[in-house]
Amino acid sequence: MECEYKISGTELRIVLPRELDHHVARQIQQETDLLVDTYHIRKIIFDFQGTDFMDSSGIGVILGRFRNARFSGGKILAEHMNPRVRKLLVMSGLECILSAETPKA
Image (cartoon, rainbow, N blue to C red; front, side, top):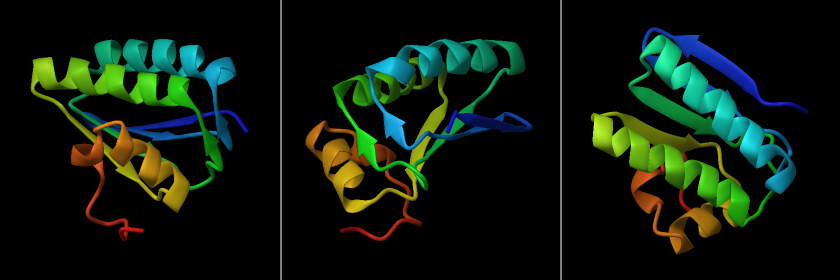
């Protein structure tokens, strides 16, 4: 499964692939940055509904977008995480982006 990008106004929803590893991380990073610049995106939602696996390169993609958004006054959210992905985000210090819509594991 490839990533799916959905733009609504200044919001970008990224439906992530089943495996978010170094093979797809760079592509996601480049495409997301291009869309943010082109469409003046202010809010990015990482949707993990179909993601079973994420490694450190996936954390890097999210962390990089978080830093960029913070500098420009934007917002980053993560939704529909399974317990393993949630744990990785919390351990990496990114619990501030976890959506309130997703129950805590």
